[in-house]
Picture: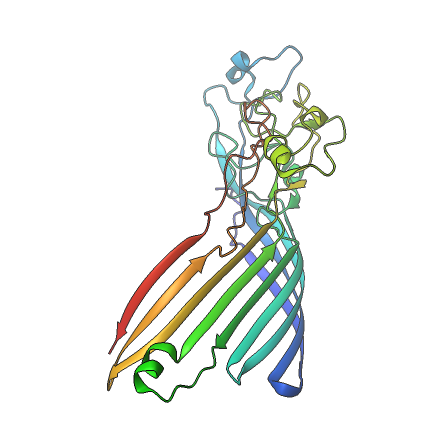
Length: 314
């Protein structure tokens, strides 16, 4: 750890305005922001220095202290910022149904990649300039919409047996639509000759492929010809998290009913459907240039899943 180490801290602030409407509806608009300071990042303080003609075979000869290889140092130099505008509409439970929906428009920026692996236990791309990693946070999602609802299915039956079986059913749903997660294009090479990895690519053209069919985007999410390995002695001119992966849409639903059996003893039957629409939610494309799957999407979230459950409560 650096001698000037200090505890990271987060300052947060928010402002909310609510207004209760007729019929049990509530409208809310909120602003929320935060600032992270002294966040920990890890860089190699014994990184090899580039000289003309340098190769990966001479890495240790170009380190400031040739008696050691990489020397990871944790430093409290990272910063982050978050700003969001949130809209909420809520219908309190009445007359057999309730609704909660919200939309978030947000931006999160930082220069710390705690989940990144740049080789040798470090997470900083350029050990001489950690600001190269300033960009959208790995978890930055500009747009998020959530909707949840509960509906008590109406039905009254005079027959006790029919009422026991067909009455009292509830339908609940959770729907989410959000932007795709960001990602960075990496060269996959140590062209900086620093002894590290995770160096950014150079951009040399237009990465957009325009409107394409889904099958085309799965194999070529971006225009691969728009990227080139970083020039020798550099860490790449492409910023961090400059692109976003596929957006995601998901709807989970459940049908459930409580069956009172005797005093203080009841059973609940549940039919749960995850990804009700069986919508394909694809993962991020492969982001390393020297991979055979460069810019191909090879993963996806689960398809539709049905689950039956019986729970006893006493």
